[in-house]
Image (cartoon, rainbow, N blue to C red):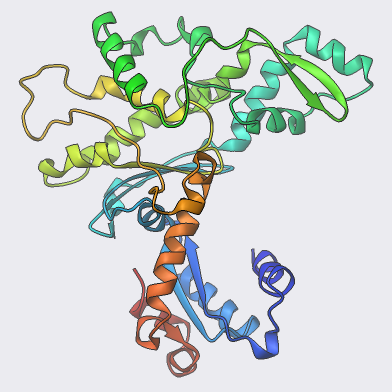
Length: 347
């Protein structure tokens, strides 16, 4: 990680180490310890010669990037998926859940599906190419190709999660009215994908790529499903009156957040945790809503820029923090108190 930071600062940004005048905001996972924060502080001051450091948790920055200070952040990374709750800019540690499934697991599962397609395997053999996880990741990341809200192939496996027909129709009608720059339409049975100068046909099983997030046993793991982790995160928050608001302010972050239909898939499967009666009390959630980067950030208002919500939140915080040395750890502070000084000025 230190090598990555070094490359960004001195290769990509072309900062001169001997004349480094750029303070740094570091966005970190909530699981990182105080010792991790101290080590970060030491690296940036002693190895990178920065004039100032500020550390902030990633979930909080993701919410800031979407224009709110309270909500649930679902961050799907390469190895794990983190579910975190933030209330009034404060991380709620009792509501942090980690699912040991990330983008890499989705790629491995998708590769298994691809390898079962004998026609596709034959096409690869004809072109003397190897069907690898690189291809699986390439297909998964193509915009609009894998629409995970389609669950035809998993209906038999998920009967216990399905809602009554009437409730399901109501949910789908609500989703249709709240589409985010997407149109649910009949998707073709097969699509052609160009890869390394050749075209390959991919079947409808491509829509199952995100299934391990909802059925961890598909990748051999005994873990919470994503909807279950979200429910537990909300239920661990007190007082109960705040819980409905959390369901209404959810943010998808991380490398997989742009997967088509993922937010609607989460909505549909999490509806079983919401009361179906009109007589539900004030502490019962009534709807699930996902936030996105506000439209007034005109450069980032397109759907594909949701990926950068954490970066946007960090930019906002950096502009507010680094205008006054009282807000962040300066080199003078570090020289006087050492790495532990980072705990005196941070979110």
